[in-house]
Length: 557
Image (cartoon, rainbow, N blue to C red):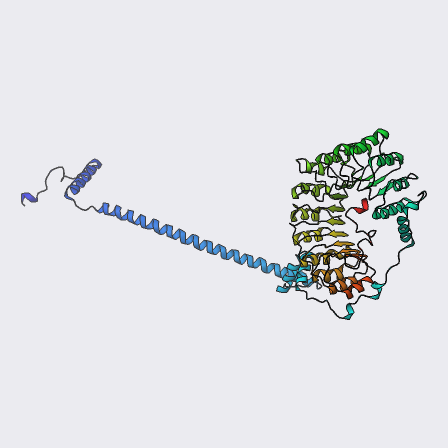
C-alpha cells in the first residue's frame, strides 16, 4: 500500500469523537467551500424556500381576495332571496286578508289614475286655470243672448228712499230733526253731502236732540269757529260716532286746543272717529284727541298729510290692545322709521287696516303683523303700496283667514301667484279690488271660478288683460255680485257684457267708463236695464252718487 493511500493522521482526518470537534469540522468545511467557490446544498435550499414563501404569500392573497369576492356575491344572493321571500309573503298575507274581507279589492294604479292623483295635488286655482286655458269659447251671439225680461224691469225705489231724496234736496226748508232716528239722520246727511250743502245750519240740525251719531261726509265749508261751537254745543257724553270728513280747513291745532279749553272732558263715550282729509291735523292735536277719548275703537285718518310716524306711535301706545279699526292711508308724512313694524305689531285686535299709498310699506314691514296680529282682520287695503310683492300676499292668504274685503289696487309687482294665494287662503271674500294690475285673463277667470260665488263687489278697472274668459267666469260663478266696475276693459265686447247682465241677476250698479266699443242700439238696451250704469255716454255722471261703491272698511265709518 502506497503511503499516499494511508490516511493522514492530521486533525482534519482523524475520527470525530465529540460535539465540539464536529462543530469545528463543519466550520472548517464551510471555510474551504467559501475559498473554492463551491455550491452549497443548504444555501440553495434556503433560496428555494424564500422563493416558495413569496409564491405562497401571493397565492394566499389571491385566494383570500377570491374568497371574499365569492362571499360577497353569495351574501348579495342570499339578501335578494330574503327580500323576495318577504315580498312574496307580504303579497300572500295581503291577498289572504283581502279574501277574508271580500268587499276590499286590490286595485292596480294605471297611468291615468296616477295622472288623476297628480291633478289632485294641484290647488283649485291651478286646476281652474288649466281648464280655462283648454276651454273653448261658448259665448253665443244668437238671439237667446238678449237681456231677459226679468232683468229689464226696473225695481221701484222705496218710500223711504224717495222721501229722503226729496228732503235732501230741500234741506233749507227743514226746521228741526227732533225724534228722527240716528240711521235716518245719517242717510239724510250723506245725501246732503252729495249735493255739497253741508253748512253750519245743517250741523246744528244734526246735533239737535242729543244724538249718539253725528255724520257729515263733506265739511269743506265749515270754518274753525263754526266747528268749535258745534263740538261744544253737542251732547258729548252720549256721542259715540263722530264723522267729519273733508274738514281740512276747520280741524287745526287752534280748533282742538280751543275746544279742550271749553270742554276739558272731551269725548268720554266716543268709539268711532273719522277725520278723513283733515290736512291740517298734527301729531299734537291727535295726542289731545287720544287723551280725551279713552274708549276709541275705530279711527279714520286718511289723507291727513301732516301726520308723521309719531302719530302711529301715539295710537299704538294709547289703543294698542283696544283699537279695532285703523286707516292711515294717504298720510304721506308717515315715512319709514325703525319702529314702524313694532308700532304696527302693538295693535292686537284690528278688524280693519288701511295703509294705502304709504311708500314705507313693503313685505318686511307688514310680515310680522300678518303672522301674529291678523287673525281677526276682515278688511284690508294695500292700494298703491308699490313695494308689495307676491310674498306679502302669501302671508295674507296664510294668516288672514277671516278676510272679507281686500284692496290691492295698482300693485305692479303682483303676478297670478298672488291670485292663487288669495283664493286658496281667503275663503270668505265679499269685496275684491284689482284695479290697474297686470293679472292675466285666465288668472282672473280662475280666481272667479274658485271664489266668485261669495263676492258682492268686484273692481277690474284698468285691468288691461280682462277678456272673454273673465266675462264667462263672471256670468257663471258670480251670482251674488251687486257692484261691478269694468271701466277701461276694452277687450270685452257687447256680447260679453250682455251675457254678464243676463246671468248676474243680483247686479245693482255697473261702471263702464272708457267703453267705446258699444253702439247706440246696445246703449238703448242698457237704458232699459234695472242696473244703474255710469260712465257711458247718454248716462249722467251725477245721477247715482247716493248709490256709491262701498269702500274697504265702509261698514266701520
